[in-house]
Image 1: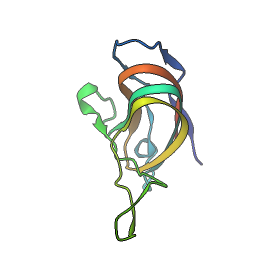
Image 2 (image 1 turned 30 degrees about the vertical axis):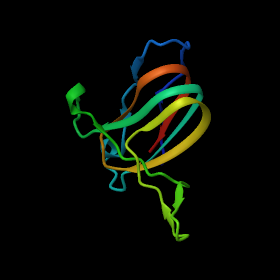
Image 3 (image 1 turned 45 degrees about the vertical axis):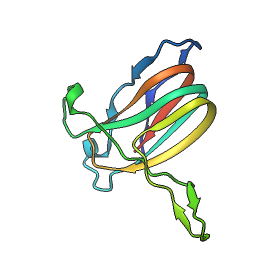
Length: 136
């Protein structure tokens, strides 16, 4: 049965030049439950956000800060067209960077038998993280 957990709840940053970093709570990944499929879905909503969102995982049961690594997110619906007309799926990504203020609600998938998952916000100078959720 799928589980829904919150990686990060409502946080706001007033528009100013101070750069903030924020790390969310760790939540159980599929590896914690012993599931072999490793399928995860991350959904987030941001409002006027400028910064970088990274989803991290660990294989350690009781992790320290050094035990976390960036997860590769599948980039659904993102395609490129070259000059010959060839359509290709865009490369998967390790972080979601917003260099101008952006408002959106987005979903990404990743596969990995990680025991814990967390969200990390870096280079954050503006806007609101309304939520970041994880479904396992």
